[in-house]
Amino acid sequence: MTREPVLTFTENGIYCPAGDFYIDPWRPVDRALITHGHADHARDGMGSYLATHAALPVMRHRLGDIIIEGIAYGETRQIGGAMVSFHPAGHVPGSAQIRVEVAGEVWVASGDYKVIDDGMSEPFEPVQCHHFITESTFGLPVFRWAPQAEVAGQINDWWAGCKATGKTAFLGAYSLGKAQRLLSMLDPTIGPILTHTAVENTNAVLRGQGITLPDTTLVTPELVPKEHPGALVLAPPSALGSQWARRFGPQESAFASGWMALRGVRRRRAGDRGFVISDHADWHGLLWAIRETGAENIYVTHGYTDIFTRYLNDEGWNAQVVPTQFDSDGGDSE
Image (cartoon, rainbow, N blue to C red; front, side):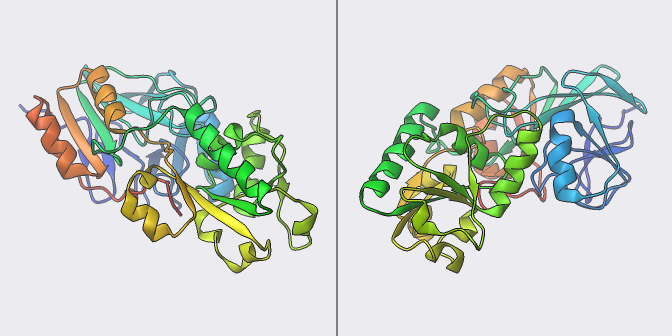
């Protein structure tokens, strides 16, 4: 008799029949296991949530009064007929891959992940499994990330150049994860670091968890730009070029995203600079992670799904595309 798959793909999301729970569901369900706090993976309306302890503060900040329970990395918990554990994904603080085992068959849902250590998120740990559900946000060979220290040098040199010409530097980045990673890369001796409310609210949550970040100043209506010469303003991409930003006078804007590797995207953004840095795995990172799992069966979700799946099949994996409702931007834009 054929056994039901450990994980199935439904109109509500990734479902485990043995445990009667969903992973990162996009419609309201009774029980949701959440890989991380970005809005396309942690949505409102679930009966109950389970996520890593480090993900709880951001989820409460975003979703309000929810029924949520924390779990430690590597802790094994039985839910119905399934054994579940959460393992570091390296995407943003608190992010996890979710391992599900039923009758000796192991599946891993990656959520979003990056395989380099950014010094802030819990570093990615490969998890051995039979079936691996992977994102493919940057699943093209053109996406290859430079070392973080190299990108930090580029950003700080640009900022110093803006200061030398009397301009305010505006750096656009997603408010959860990317903004804090950039903060850790900035050289505060260049000048003051100012923040948009969306960024500063998340900073406060992460500082409350013990994550060390440089000193920042919130941009309020009362703030006088000329009292902060040589400043860098860290804000969501949507704020760049807005009336909120124009009050600072002469300025340059830059976007920090993996998408900056594509010239067409850089042109459409219309910023002065683009810095290539992402909280997702690049082409080589995706392939390395898949090899490390030892899985033969690969399920490819949001991103360059068709191209990446064809490559995996050509290389000997049994790969297939799985349609999902996760954001193909993967949190790299707002």
